[in-house]
Length: 221
Image 1 (cartoon, helix red, strand yellow):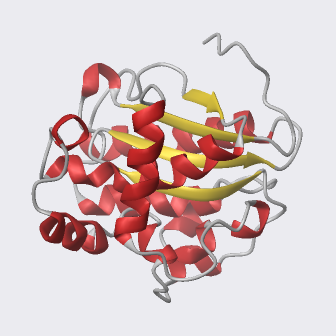
Image 2 (cartoon, one colour):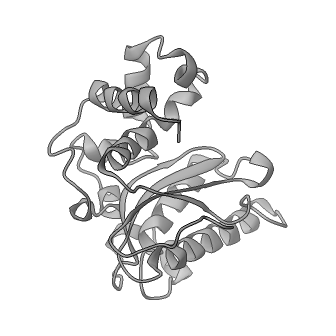
Image 3 (cartoon, one colour):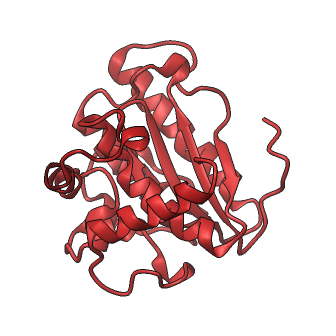
């Protein structure tokens, strides 16, 4: 895939991909849990030992150095979104190769599938200014809204209370880690590598405001 840029150390990127032909690649919640575990385990300069994954103690396993820093993530049904910081030379490319290969192996084995799981190489956008970077935190965490209101981006949110409740109950994004929840999954993130936009518990309405303000003056991501 030609992206029009090279990944550079200390730069930020929105990275995403979806299932081939838009197929569902996270069929069961355990698939999303596996992918989240791989976000932690594959962010590692050492090889991933797949026997370790069976232990279930994913977030306490020792690792080598990070390839990338992860600022936020959201695992949907047929795609995923990541906010990444290039921590080492070639880190994003190496991390994504490990992550997608590991998950594809798991998916093919579990569901007895053959062929391509993902829709080609992963996609990436360079977040080359502060406004864009801040917006992506909101964009990624608001993605699950489409599960209960597919037209919200075009028509606006009809029931804010319902949407807010759903987002806070959605376990397969990093939103809960920004809401002060103490959970092991927090170890996927390294927020020290990112600007401190959200120093404390961040309210849903503020996320929505950031998303809307950016969308009103820019093309949608």
